[in-house]
Length: 190
Image (cartoon, rainbow, N blue to C red; front, side):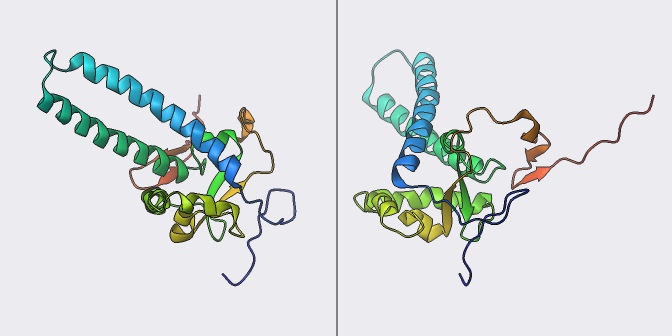
């Protein structure tokens, strides 16, 4: 990168980016894991209620493998879709005022968000060193951020639990490959 990343907000001059540190990112991750665990718990109870009532080792192993695959797909979809959405972050990141960008400060797309999610395996397989390096890199990047060329930044306001209703754009939707803005309809004539 040749120039320094500058963040511009409406009505304000460009400021230096505020990188999200280890503990703030960890807190956001705990919120996300809690939400995913609740959803997976509901799915597990549903599967147990629908499953066979006889205990069989093969059926249990088959159920565990299927549940693990569904859980992995659910987590991938959760992180990739939210981080590539107009929110630019998961529910946990949004609640703590964090968002994900590329190294230029632009929003990331679905494929980069997917790559970032799957690269988290390398951060974990490195005996968690890939996560811990957030505390030591200049731009607070984990291993998966370095490899996916992404940043996690803090918004000007730390807590965004109740956003301003006027700033919420409900015209954006997922078309299967990216988030797009719906065209405005002309007013209905009487």
